[in-house]
Amino acid sequence: MAEPLLVLQGIVKSFRQGRRGMLHALKDVSLDVHAGEIVALVGESGSGKSTLGRVALGLLRPDAGRVRFDGHDFAALTSQQFRRLRVGMQPIFQDPSASLNPRRTVRESLEQALWRTPGDEQARCVRLLEDVGLRPALPFLERYPHELSGGQRQRVLIARCLAMQPKLIIADEPLSGADVSIRGQVLNLLLDIQRRRNVAYLMITHDISIARAFADRVAVMMKGELVEIGPAREVLSVPSHSYTRRLLAAVPALG
Ligand SMILES: Nc1ncnc2c1ncn2[C@@H]1O[C@H](COP(=O)(O)OP(=O)(O)O)[C@@H](O)[C@H]1O
Ligand SMILES: [Mg+2]
Picture 1 (spheres, protein in one colour):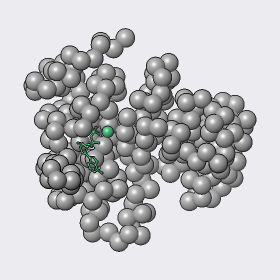
Picture 2: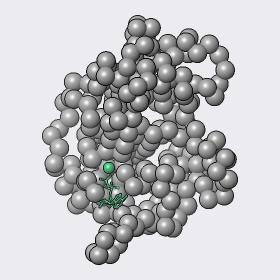
Picture 3: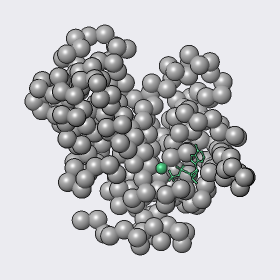
């Protein structure tokens, strides 16, 4: 079997917490994501999910452990090699208004992401916007983020992410800023992208119903440890850990 796209091995990360000493956010966490796979990382707030996502993205250096992406060990790369590799791994964060520059039009935000590959920029911007369901695309190009709805901003962010042609998208609570009516649409869009482009996802969420609708595998974090991991159907229908059962009991059945 091919090496997983992302390998997190024995990741340890602690934060200093004033006089109270160290907060052990990640205690020896190992997780991998295969090409084209959707892995949901679930767990209650404060369990260490975002910290693990930040370590995977290279935004945070672990105290111990290894991160490998696409066959390369982060620790073995020069910063230039790392930047090149990192293009293949793109984040989508929760708040689309914080992630888009308010002074840039949609066109400017997308063009910034497109400089890597040659071609007619306007045509490619239009194609990207159509890809994320903003049709007709042309009128969106000259709009600023404040002229878009929350759902449209999230779609622009996803378009910008796709412009990099990532192999892996690390999405940290990408739907929790959106209201209920557009959550389903954005979720469907992400699924559609996965099918069309075979992108892998590490989908970080406290909402286990998203994992149920979406994931191939589910990893459950509690207090800095992975307490359960397995195929979504198994973990979510016959959870072996009492913490997973509690998480499941806390959500209403998905409609
Ligand atoms: N930069 C930081 N400095 C200090 N503590 C942090 C920092 N980032 C996260 N933490 C702490 O680490 C723990 C895990 O946080 P986080 O990874 O954000 O959890 P989650 O995403 O599951 O809600 C929390 O107790 C949080 O307060
Ligand atoms: Mg978080």
